[in-house]
Image (cartoon, rainbow, N blue to C red; front, side):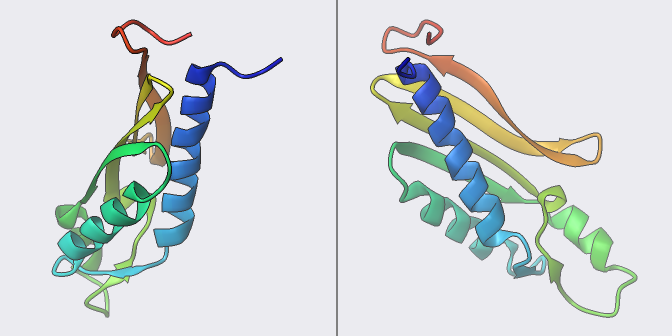
Length: 122
């Protein structure tokens, strides 16, 4: 059985998050470098096939709190310091997916799937 276009679009969204997390987790980051790193994430993941948009926010307040009592001026990037939303379009199926902390874990999930007429993809 062939996957539907909506299933393939969801798979593509998963691929984007997998490469995003495994490419950037561990990157040294500080509140001062957060904006440029967020831009690098957006531009890098945005290069991938079927990726229509990427919005990455590095949570500078959380970074500052992490660094407040630490010995260094930077820490490593992990999911708890990021909120990311992306949109994939595959054969008219648009998938909106996001990554955000939920119960202490950086959860990646599909938020919506819509077809070319705006209806839920099948």
